Every structure is written in C-alpha cells, then in structure tokens.
Amino acid sequence: ALLKRLAWAALLVEPLPDIFQRLQKTYDGYPLVKLANVAVTREDQACEMLRVPPELLDDADVPDWAVGIASFFSDRTAVGGVGTDPNDYQTFADKVIKQKVTCVTMEKLLEENAVPRIDYLQIDAEGYDAFLLAQLDLRHWHPRAVGLETINLKAEELLEVYRTLLSNGFHVQSDGRDLFAWRVTVPAAAAS
Image (tube, rainbow, N blue to C red):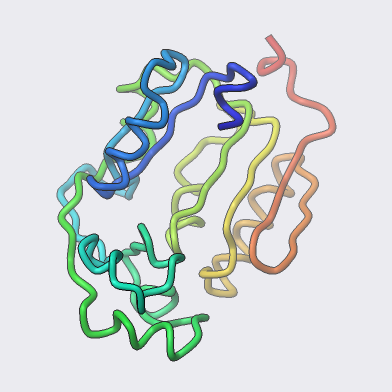
C-alpha cells in the first residue's frame, strides 16, 4: 500500500465491519495509520446503510465491484442499481440488506483520533461525499489537496462542492466521476 511505502500518517474510515477487518489486517504493524470503524454523518448516532451482504460476495454471479458497496442512498448509487449494468444489478438487487453502523460527525472523528492536520483529504462515500466536505472547515484545516467521488452527487450538490473548493483557493479538475482539487499556495497557518 502507498501509505506503507511512503510512511505517511493517515486516518482511514470504514463503516462496514467485515471490510474494516480487512483494513486492520492490511495496516497491522503500521503505527502511523489509524483506523476508525464508523461512518461520518451529520450527527453522532446509530445508522443503517444499504449494502450487498458479505456472504453473497462469494457467489460467482455477483460482480467483484460489489464487494463493500454500501450507501445511505438507494436512489443514486450502485447499491440501488444506478449506473450499473442491469444484469450485474439483478445478481444482488433483491438481496440488499440494511447494515447497522456507528455514525459520528467529522468534528468528533478528527477530535477522537487527535488529528493534528490534514494534508490530503480523500472522500469516497457513495453519494454522501458533498455532505462530508461541507462538514470540514477548510479555513481551519487547510488541506493541500482533496480527492472526491462525484459520480453519485446530485447536480446542486456538485455545484456546491465546486463553490466550496474554488472559494477556498483550490484549483479543480474532474473526469466526471471524481474530482481532484489542489492549492498552488497553502495558507501560512497550514505550512507549519
């Protein structure tokens, strides 16, 4: 993994218990990598996510990309069949389950994990991405770069993501599925 090779500090967030266990195995013995078995939402609470059941993933008919696919939304993500091949979707459509997960706010997540700064923020939250970016005070945290999945966002959410990033001094590039934003200069408070 890149984090291991570069010896970067990181906080990785994964709400699904079985996928979280895989992360634990992958990063075992790497003290610079912290893991949080939560979903980041607007409130600290228990939540339910829609997902493909883990036991179904051994089924040869279910596509590999379905491993770990989960979302709070069924109306705009692959877990609800959006943007997928109809034949692939039919292999798990009637088997999607609700998975209980622990949910925390971005503020609580960063505080509980004693995150001192954010250099790079990567968000891939299956339609919840804009909500997560909105929770982060970019003027306080000063990330140097942001990666964000956009394929599952509504048009008004995508527009707000662009407004937020551009108004905070980021340059933005997108391929229609994801965007990458970076700052040419980082505010002095963040450079230390």
